[in-house]
Amino acid sequence: MTDLSTRLDLVRHNLLQSIKVASEEFGIDPRQEARRLANLYNIEAKAHDPEEFVELALHLLVYPPPLAFAIANQFSDLTAQLGFSPFATLMVTIGHIDHLFAGVAFRVSHLRAFGPPPYLEVVESKNLRLQRAGTVMAIALLLIGRTIPQIRDNYQKQDFQTPLKEIIDAELAKIDPEIACAVYV
Image (tube, rainbow, N blue to C red; front, side, top):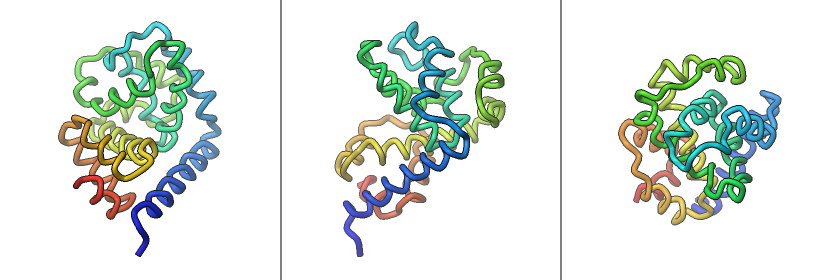
């Protein structure tokens, strides 16, 4: 039986590989894509408010979840310039996409013109939107936290709402049931 630390290292390695595979499959460099999206959505003009990031978060949810996380993570490069962490704001937005999505006006044309399919499905299907958001959040928890206690702490600090919390829990369990159990404790 492998200890949890070794299992976590393997999980993190596999997630990083899935990012690489998705990046190559779609021909997208996460750093360049983050810069492109920062310009497209005029991120420099956005306030430190998750509601301001809904359109960008929806765009990210169009990508396969590992690639969506990798692109979002690249927004960390803009923290000093903006005076806040756009990556953290994006993670809050994605973690609350169901609540924030309701009633927000945005341009589907950006998704149609500049995002890969399934852009309309992400906008129109609450289930797909939540599934993608839950998977991205599970990946984020596992890649941001360096240890099981850090992951557990990050997980417990979040105020994920049902059904997103259930999706995150299921995704964590699908990735590694033993690590998931250690996170829930």
